Amino acid sequence: PELIQPQPYRPAYHFTPPHAWMNDPNGMVYYKGLYHLFYQFHPYSNVWGPMHWGHATSPDMIHWTHQPIALAPDELGAIFSGSVVVDWKNTSGFGTADNPPLVAIFTYHNEADRLAGKRPPQSQALAYSSDNGASWTKYAGNPVLKAAPDQGDFRDPKVRWHEASQSWIMSLAVGDHVEFHASPDLKQWHLLSQFGKNVGAHGGVWECPDLLPIRVAETGGQKWMLLLSINPGGPNGGSATQFFIGDFDGRNFVLDPAFASQLEQDGPQWIDWGRDNYAGVTWSDVPAADGRVLMLGWMSNWDYATKVPTSAWRSGMTLPRELQLHRQAQGYVLHSLPVRELDALKGRISQPQTATATEGLSLSGRALEQSETYVEFSLPGGNSKAYLEFSNAQGEAYKVGLDGQTGRYFSDRRQAGRKDFSEQFASKLHTAPRHAQSAVVRMRVYLDRNSAELFADDGATLMSELIFPSAPYTQVRFLVDGQAAQPAAFTVTEIGSSQTS
Ligand code: FRU
Image 1 (cartoon, rainbow, N blue to C red):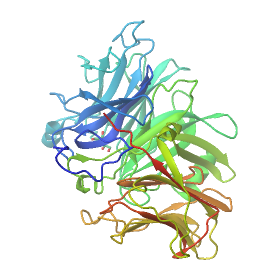
Image 2: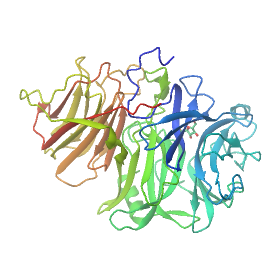
Image 3: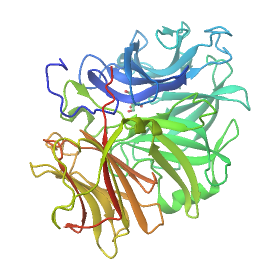
Image 4: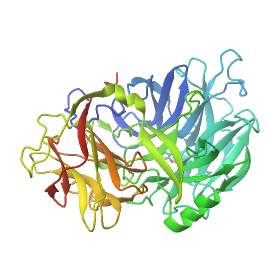
């Protein structure tokens, strides 16, 4: 069916499923030169349903090849989110010393049990692959970790090897907090500790935790970061992902004192202030020689995900990003940058043509549909607003920029295109704090048919947003209070298609 219907909103350089419904990224693991991406998949409709794990592979996180469905529901339940590890030492015994297995740790969700109120509907289970992820066998001893009798939310295991304690550590979302469990072999688990009951945002259920070591750029020292998705309760409504910085001794995750006071002063810390970056976790087993922390998220929001105006497929992923932790005077700032592999798709660069004083840069054709716009300008003074405006002949415009009065970034999709499908989609202006202190503002905005991703101040502030213009934008202008203005730098780079096969 996807060949019959026109798909004007299907992204060209972001990952989307071949057809049908997708949500969270799952089981992201790097193995033998390929990045694996599994994902929450309902192959039989374009709304959420009994979950499978879809699968795709890529040499660079940009060009993807679709693979057969990896995991399908069975009598224990549907297959919710989870992770994949390379069991290098074959601790599980699922492989051999020469051919270490890939092991998936996922949540079974049993809807019949939930409806009947019979027993806790969620439990953790294993599947393994001895052929580099091509085929998967579920472990006969499933489930390996069951919830307490009264625990409904008990899901999204993210597992990593902890060298110091020679054990596997699992982060698990348990309603309003995270539990850490440990195991020598991925099969036997014991509870280590809990985190989060009284810290961070609690406007909704906690989901998709990820505990990982991360280097501090300024000191070279190591910290531990906990990524934690929450729905609802995000800074601009609905789903969003927060982060915590601290230390982990193999048992407890303890907040860094500086980060704890940051939380008290500034409130929850979000990896992305846009409304469309959710349930993101990091890639496992990225080689030490590479050393990057790599992640991507689901580019949607539970507030309206099932209603967005696409039908043959629904939902894409964000651009894959590299995360860098910075220690500034005011505290920790997490930067995200598009992975450098994206550079291979970059094409023609255009400079603004100031045809008339009010016009700004105009581009004909569809050059803006897949583009990176870079603009550099001085901090707007007083109560001025400086922003990029992407528009089409239909009179629709998406605006993204900085408000001098509040000192905050904003993303305005209220007139950007279709929004009739959900009242929750575009009723408000979305805003984000500026973390950089410099007088020079730098914004990079990536457009890809149905999305706009802002990376401001070298990734210090992010806003990833879906947009549904009824025709592609053909003009971009830099404006200060509605007037065309001269920024210090202004370029538009075309981005090619990654042609998922
Ligand atoms: C997050 C989430 C997870 C769950 C999955 C189900 O979006 O709710 O907590 O495992 O989606 O599809």
